[in-house]
Figure 1: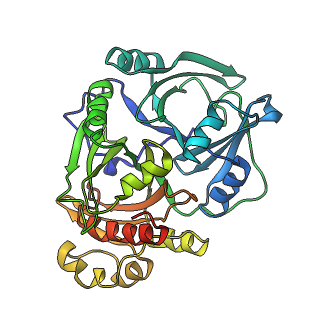
Figure 2: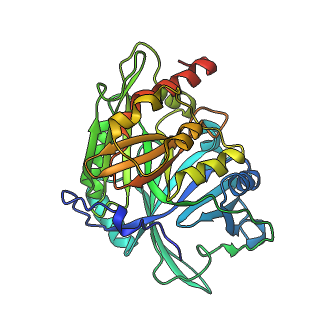
Length: 379
């Protein structure tokens, strides 16, 4: 069973983290969506994921349907309701399509539940066992910011296509993958003055440590600002930046997100690739729209970041940003919102040694977001 373990050279051991769970990687990310069948086609045709498993009426599930999409070590589960009312409908009505579950792969889901509950987590799912002919899986879960939850998944005694209750899918329609490898990090947007609360939650309840922080001097433009702290588990496989708004002359992207999402939630997933030029070229050819920065960004970027392996011309043509830290450099680019509501988007990232998050690109990136906000009339 493929799981989200980054290559060893991309892991950064965080000695300050207790890692008492411990977390082995991201098992899957579940999104509640209005039409899972059409969303699955989008993720397959545009992004290069394949449908590997399914649960719905054909498998005996009467209230909802789920498609499991996979590319390398990334698994997305797209779930839609089949009946009126209920939690899934409520979530979609309030938030539009969005992330409900960040599932974390663990050795012991019962221990993970007990350890987090005794440290102050609110229970979402008491430990339970599900079985089928392929073995058994133990689940448990806790609440986090907004209506987002963490499910702990213990699958060492299971060898099926995904989880009990799902049937494997191998349809003839295939798309070429786009080179996406694993989830590098996932960013949560929270409300005013809530960043520290949730960073403390991850530190106290889950044993995470703070990797880096950015204040409104680091992340600001003429008009808007935000604050951010990055929390990481001990083996560095799970990284959660947490953003909150900061005072500015106009409405920030975090405020816009919270207004349209109706609360805190997952703002974006950063998906890692080994060849960002190739990945972004394929995605653009398939219709994915990315934020753009002025051509002037590239006139001075190498003065700031130094020598890189790539030619600058294709990076400039595609709008890929570059930044450097003490350990190397990174290449990154951000999509426009992938939904009608200006909420969730994706980041594509290639790390060439760097362990940071593109601090040198913040101003150019946020000005690009502000241009989009201005077009939407929400700045």
